[in-house]
Amino acid sequence: MSMHIDPQATGNLLWFGNTVVSVKLSSQSGSDGISVIEHWMPFGEAPPLHIHQREDEVFHILGGVMRFRVGDQEITAGTGDTVMAPKGVPHAFRVESTEGAHCLTIMKGSDFETMLRQASRTAERPNLPEAMTPSSEMIERLVAICAANKIDIVGPPVS
Image (cartoon, rainbow, N blue to C red; front, top):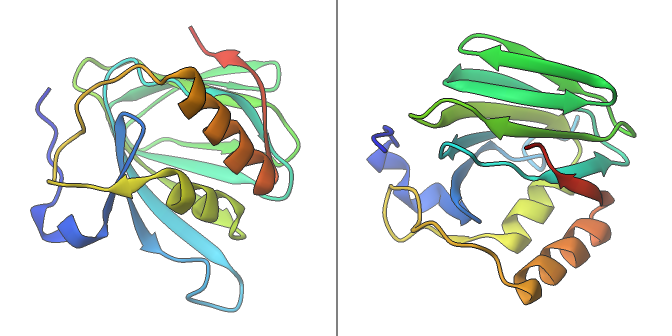
């Protein structure tokens, strides 16, 4: 997959599962606690259905196509579209474009950002990591980190 990831951002890049993330604005940067996180994701990327207990999650699509499930709604969004997943509402997505997807998530609060920092590892290069299927230990660790940050895993990924 050819996806442009800014090589100048190498020191800020994290590998989160099969994706690359970069915290562009930390929740600690201002008094309102707003965070902006940039994501590069491969085709088929699909986190489990989950609920943020204390934060709305706003997705702004910079490239590619993503299919969202937010509550009972299914939404397909592409470049330039913005999708809101309100706190307390189950949501998930799947990257539908073969070239992958590139988006920003914007949140008020530190739960999601903290979870990403705890569950990620420093990217060794400005590329997507080698694709892997998570082990049961990795899944258990992620569920525990999410729970500690008020994010509940409540179902399977969007298929």
